[in-house]
Image (cartoon, rainbow, N blue to C red; front, side, top):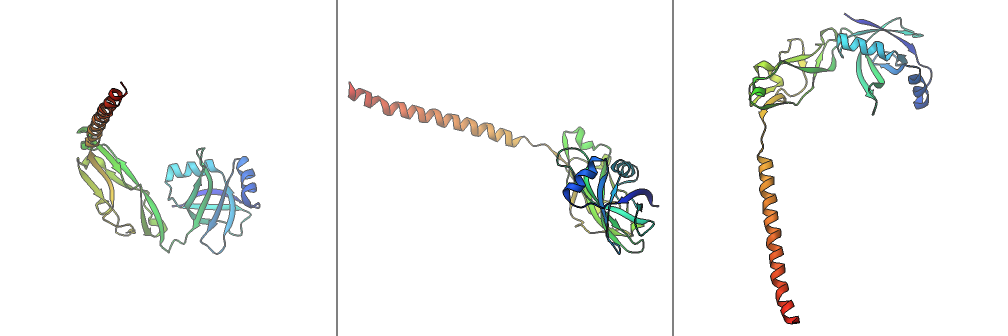
Length: 221
């Protein structure tokens, strides 16, 4: 079921116009994928609230003031993050046909703690999203990994995820999603040995230099 969001046709174009729009507390956006592309603005606070409640891939029933269409069903396809401050600079909405499949990135969520962590293991999440293809109404909110079942030195691959039959995974099934591995300190030990060897080499070099200097001093006398 789609959730409602309001927007307004955006007249201005370019960085200057978008900067002024953001100064008023609105977010520049565009809708594409349908018969026509639409430049609009939305309230970023309302969009953020919607995403936090329904998920990044939730279907949105977008009502744009001044639009030729009364409503458009869209999903958030891409967004531009501000380089310094938290928040978005721009959002791209993809208009969808409920009868046609689309490609989206589904978030991967780790749930619980791995027993391997209690043994000193480190959790390394290799993938934060998995690309899928499905009908808009079938987009999963997320793929959850039960970390309480992931032991030390175990790797969870995409093929291990619970995926509904109507969802097609586009990434390689052999890709690692998350792993729990032992923290190795061998590199630090090796560094200490190397440093010790370097110090010894420096001392030997200094000793040789002193030996060479003695005959020269004797000759002067």
